[in-house]
Each structure stands twice: as structure tokens, then as C-alpha cells.
Length: 401
Image 1 (cartoon, rainbow, N blue to C red):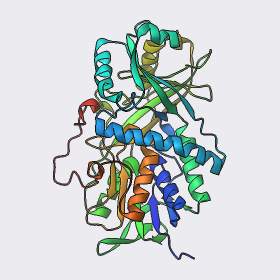
Image 2 (cartoon, one colour):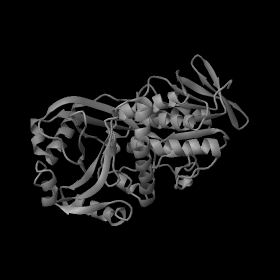
Image 3 (tube, one colour):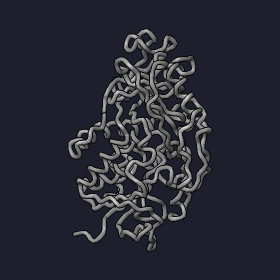
Image 4 (cartoon, rainbow, N blue to C red):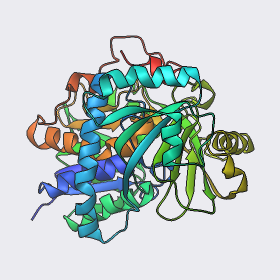
């Protein structure tokens, strides 16, 4: 019988829960520590849209990590349903990446030139788009047609990951973490508000609150909170037959529960994210209140794409914050100067898309010191900004090289 867990995972968002599941599934003793509740942060407010043509995987190396994330999510969904019985509202449909103006068309076509080497995607004209969905705007010039895209309910997905981790032996502890107990270059325990948990390794999956851990680690964590808001509408008529998005207008997705998801602010390329990028602040002071301005913006964007949305009823307005790194790549891997502390944050808009593959990578690194996932670990390394300037660029599509 273990007297202490092999690994303590701090943070029960989608990324932390996926890490806990993969570790527990591999036989490790795991304690998942969360100060509030499972999926209490960005993982509840995310759209849950998994697309390779319609995301901010704007460089080919990052795109390939996204491809691994898509495959990993498709593989894990049936396992989670089997272990937990939770309906994830998962759907696999074609994707339409719409161009409503010349800039969007040029942007989409430029990326198709290399995306089509890896996935089944092609350009179709406006008439072909409206043959698929006649309610779409006559302003649509064309679209990237993606044979397979997916969407699920992000809160249910996160809960299923946590529940599956528990079914595989992990324990959940609801406590606020205060720091690490260090001996030499190793963490021997995680200190929380009512005691400590001894451990063999620690994974910090704190999302936008990751900078709180900087004093524990003795190094800066270059993550800033990116606020995003989205709507859920009730629109009469059949669901959209494809998962729809636009570089400037975000996504419109008919969910399996009947809602039309519209969003999100700061969830688009070809836009300035600066208005949504919050200052790094104390963990209890992130502004996650929905705003009237965002509601009006989102409704206006929906009308541009599908004019009949004017007849829809607003049911829910959600807001949350995501962890954004300066170069849009996540910070995943062992922390410099520590032998057994790992970081997993900075996924930006792609936390749900990359949760399953991040869980696999981190579990591999903790248990084996390497991973078979085909990714350049130096691109993910948490210490990659220690000796270079940190600058958060305003335009996501310009951030990757």
C-alpha cells in the first residue's frame, strides 16, 4: 500500500484532469488537488470545438501537435464514456471555414497549401457552401471544407476525465495549494491550506493562474489571462449540418443539446487580442463577468454568418479566461532546476483540443522521462523564455514562426 502518492496534480481543468487520468491509467498513485471544483475555470466556458482547419494552429509544427491532439481526443472519448457513463455530447461532423471577404479567403487559401498535406481539406466556392447549408449568408465567398471536425461539451469532458481518473485509482482533494516543500532540487510535498501531501512528483496545471506558482519555482511563468465570452442561442429549425467558423467571426456550432454556440471573443485569428488580454493579477481577481458589449458583438457576428440568427433566443452568456503564452505554444514539461516538478499551462484557445495529448505527454515524461508523441519538446519547454525577451503579440496569426 502506498503511504503517499506518486504524483500530485494541481489544477482540475481539462488539462489537469487529463494528466491525472493518464497517470492513474498507467498505474501511478495520483492525488488531484483543486481549490474550487472540477472544471471551475476556462474548461466550463470553452466551446469544445476540435478543428485543424479552423483553429490557431497557424504554423505547421504546431498544426502537427494539434493533429496528435485531435487523434488523442477521438481515441479517449469512447474510453471515457465506457468508464464513466457520462454523455459528452460529442459529435463528429464536417467543418466549414468560411471566408466572407477577400482577406479571409486569402488567409484560408494560404494555409490550405500546407494543411492539405496532412488532413482531408479542400476549398469549395460559395455556391457549394450554400448547397450544404442554405441559411448561410450570400456574402460567403467560399470555405475550407474539412472532412472531419469535432465538438463536445467541455465541462462534461473535464468531469469525465476526472471521474475516469478516480475510477483508475486517483483521489480528489479540494484545497487551495500554497506552495511546494523543497529538498535540494526535488519537491517532497505539496503544501495546502490545511496541511501537506507528500509526493514523488508534482504537476502544476493551473491554467491562467499559473503565475501564482512563480515564487514556488523561483522562475517567471510567462502566462497571461485571455478573456473570452460566448453565447448559447436557441434557433428554430434543423441544426447546422457542419461545424462552422470564420477567421474574423469565430465559430457557430449546433450542439447536440439543441443550442447554437456562438463565440468566442478573442477566439479568432485576424484580430487584435489586446483588448481581451488581462494583466497578470492575483488568482482571486480575474475578471470573468459577461459584458453587454461582448454580447452585442457576438450577436452581430452571428448575423453576418447566418442572418436567420435574428430570430434566435439568447439562452446563456458565458465568460472565462484562458492561459496564453507569448508564442501561443503551451508550456509543458519539466521545470528547470527541479528534478520532479512539471508545468502544463499556456494552451490559450486550445486547452480542450490539446488536453488529451498533453495528458499523455506529461504522463510519459513523469513516468519514463521521454515520450513517443512526435513533438519537439523544446518548443514546449517551460524554461524556453528564461533567456529571451517575453512579448505578448497582439495578433495570433503572426505569433508562430
